[in-house]
Length: 233
Image (cartoon, rainbow, N blue to C red):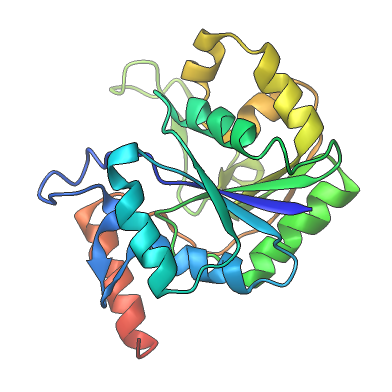
């Protein structure tokens, strides 16, 4: 089994001019979340889809699942108080389907340009190792500073990578880590692979894509619309 968990519980605090969380903004007649849902729906290796979302948006999502014929959807999980809490809720939601060695693929609803090729690599990586994550290289020189005013050290750019989503994991091991984690650990985890790496899971890195960006700001939203216009959507 390859199970997708789509994280759609965020409130989009950096886009205050919008009257709804960013993943539900409608662009070209469809909410942003449905762009990635269509990709997972059409991927031949994805068996089930679960969505982590606040209850107040679940009826809205259901309407669009029906409109876009998302047939692999199996259920909702409640949004958590942090991103990692939401992931844990998603892991619990699919526990009746997922076996120890099945793969969960965790994706942000606000990353609309995920590709089938990236999903392929996630499945391959989690099959051969314990997990996988797309990354992109850092183009700018990166400095370390303790106060934001002076340079403490220069970091080696060739050794630095920015993580993207989706991230994939063997269900049993990843779930067990969350079962044992404290509330504080879940609250302080920033990336899906962070807690896996800290607990000894071997995560394969593979090339992501600049286009696989997360919509966080109004500028990102503008870029998303521009890309759709280029594609003639």
